[in-house]
Amino acid sequence: MRSKSPYLITIIFLISSCGNETTTSSNVGENNTSTSFEETCTSYGKNTQRCNFIHDGLDRYYLIYRPTFIANNNVPILFALHGYGSSAAFHKSYTQYEQIADENNFIVIYPQGYKFESLLANSSSHWNVGAWTVASDIDDIDFIDTIIDLVSSKEQINQNRIYSSGMSNGGFISYHLACSLSSRIAAIASVTGSMSRETLASCSPNHPTSVLQIHGLEDAVVPYAGIEALGMEPIDDVLTFWADANNCNPVRVIAVVDSFSNNNSADYINYESCENDVDVKLIRIPSMGHTWPDLNNFNISATEEIWSFLSQYDLNGKIAN
Image 1 (cartoon, rainbow, N blue to C red):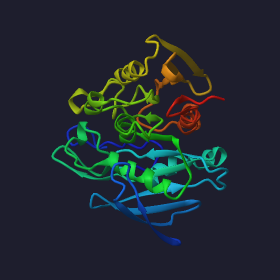
Image 2 (image 1 turned 30 degrees about the vertical axis):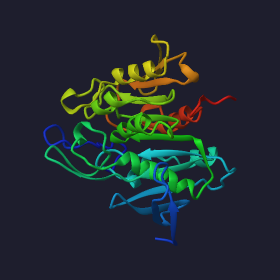
Image 3 (image 1 turned 180 degrees about the horizontal axis):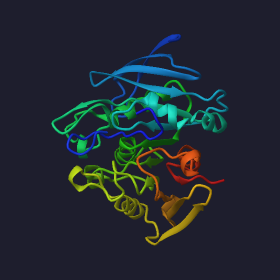
């Protein structure tokens, strides 16, 4: 997994797929403010730190990229969540949010998933979303919630503009966050991910939430039509759920964009007239498999599309110009 086509889900019966150190102690947690988390942060490249802390008795960490110049004290956060079996560092390497973060003054956080072992699957990392990870006992929702509190104790964060994005399993957990950490997550984007059966069945967001899905029709890892046996929901069902949850017009608006230079095309599908002027959007690429699209292969940069979409919204819906 060293190319820009990261196959991120491995299911036994389906597919094979240094610097200065600082230590800080913070009282974090919306519901348990007496809990003290001590984290140790070390340099991890330009404007980036790796921050380690103990969560639920486990060694966990995240990478954090701060813009070269933070222009104000009201900074948005974008979570960038890797795929199944992947890593925060690898996700950072191909998503390349740094330039956009510098230009638009937001912080990017790359959490690291924990290892997973079960009768059905084993992996060096995962996000607990149900479906094929149903045997996991890792509390990733609280892990992300704790990271928000830790970062908020160090930076002046715009608490209304915290976003989540992810690839594959990272897309699944982004949907899970939109459902289970709705009071903190303004909007989400998923690339080649979906919702698990468990997430869909229990999802009850407390505000209209914009969602962006980018998916290829040639994806054999997380197929567009879903995999019922593994609890992966079809993409159309996911979009219908969010359109209903956001009280959108049920009639989809479809635009097809052709790229004659490389025979690629993309369908841009929107549900409009949603509550609080949020949006439910799908970019469907017929020729794309399980990968992160960029301008060189599909004339679409998932990285640019994600920030362009998410940055329009906060917890209250569309941000007034």
